[in-house]
Length: 320
Ligand code: HEC
Ligand code: HEC
Image (cartoon, protein in one colour):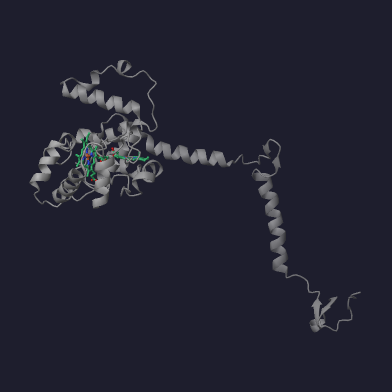
């Protein structure tokens, strides 16, 4: 049994606890004063905190505390402050067209600033954080556009979604025709003339979508075949794959899949109605929206969000 040594034989005359390990004694020094004070103070703070803030968990929530503070209230206050700052900008955006937002310095910088998070949350999974694209997803940060690079075209791409289709040609073309077309596509992208290839391109109907100038017909979302910017890949085997199996051709299991989801059916209808009105020389303000919309249109992003994103994407690369 350990026995306390009180006869003050220890250094400094301090009592020990009677515990000895390998000849080393445990002395019974009191704790330093400053340390004890800090301990008592922290105990006191617990009591003060307990009185002022929510602390004890109960069955339905917790004790409330005198200050009435809650995390959710703090969050709501912060949110209200941010929204108060944003509200006038959002109101201005709501009554402007995308083109007007782009042309106005204030609205444009607000739109771009508040779109980074929006783009990160909704678009970056497919198009990359900086719009750099991926194996099956087009680059948004360049000046090559399948569906047009005007800010209106971009807004339409986002609102309506896009799904370019190219039929599979495996059953239509002979092997040597495929070889010739692959070579033509490669030559064409390098600016090398290939008369027989071009003739086959016209004869086999590629011209219907990729156009007489081979730059791609925008309405079809057909790729530009005159440049080195590849929607999929410039490798010979990959070009062959596209020609044989097409893009979004449901009848071919090896087809390339490429779907841009629609973000607002409602806004797509509105943009189309406005475009028709302008084309016909009518005032878009006269459009009867009750007539155009029945209220059941889906909307994954609001109109303002799409306007902002269109301006954002437009400045990522070379909008037109
Ligand atoms: C599920 C993947 C996916 C998501 C998410 C997605 N996109 Fe796309 N996007 C695509 C694909 C695929 C295409 C090309 C469609 C085609 O080839 O016909 C495309 C095309 C586009 C185009 C047209 C490009 C051109 O060259 O004309 C724009 C603009 C665009 N996306 C913007 C966005 C924005 C902004 C968002 C976020 C709100 C977004 N996308 C979210 C897959 C996606
Ligand atoms: C019905 C329209 C249509 C026809 C016909 C068509 N294409 Fe396409 N093609 C497209 C579309 C649309 C794309 C782009 C798909 C996308 O990005 O979603 C495309 C993409 C391509 C690509 C990929 C380009 C790249 O940048 O990666 C090649 C190569 C191509 N087509 C070659 C041809 C050839 C050769 C023919 C004729 C045998 C042909 N296409 C016929 C619509 C068509």
